[in-house]
Length: 232
Figure 1 (cartoon, rainbow, N blue to C red):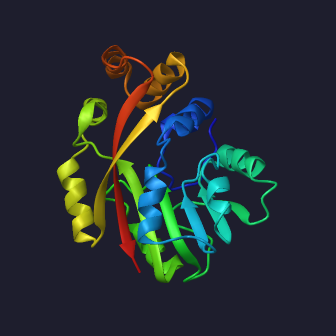
Figure 2: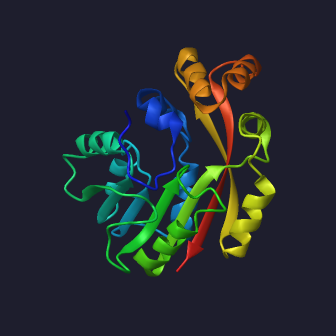
C-alpha cells in the first residue's frame, strides 16, 4: 500500500510508476526553458530554494548546483526515500516528508519556492498558498508550473482524460490570487519509442493514451505549459 501523509493530493503517475515518471522527467524540456524563465524573474544563485512536491528529487541536484540551500518537500514516503538516496552526496540538500499545506519550515525562511505539476492546480489549493505566503521571505518568489490545457494535442488529451477540469475556472482563480502567468512552449524528447508510449499511458486514461500514441509519430511530444509566479 502507498504510504503518504494525510492531506496529500494523490499523484497517480509518479506515485504508482516512479520508474516511468523518471523517463518523463528526463524527456521534458531538454532546452531548459522553464528554468530560464524562472531565473529571469528571480535568480536562485546562493538562495534558499524550496521544491514542493519534489517526488524522487529529480530536480534537486540541478538546483543545488547554484543555490545555497535546497529543501525538498514530498508527501509520499516512498518517494521521499528515493529523493534522499539521490541527494545523499549533496550537503546543501535536505528532504522532508511534508505536504504543501503544512511545511516544516520557519516563517520567512525561503527565497524561491517551486512546484512543478504538484498540488497547486487552482481552486482548493488556498492552504498551500497560505503556506507560501508564510515561508517565502520578502524579496522572494514562488513559481508554479503546470500543463496548459488550452493548447495543443497534449492539452486536448488531458481534457479528454479529465473532463471535469475547467481551464477557465483555474485561470480565474489564479488571477484573483494576484499571480502572473507566462506560456511555456516545452517539449518532451525521448530516446526510445517504448519510453514515449509508456509515459503517455501513465498520463492519460487507456483509451485516450491509445489515441495519443496513434497521433504521435517519432520520439517527440509538444508539451505546452504555463508558468505562474508571484513576487513577495
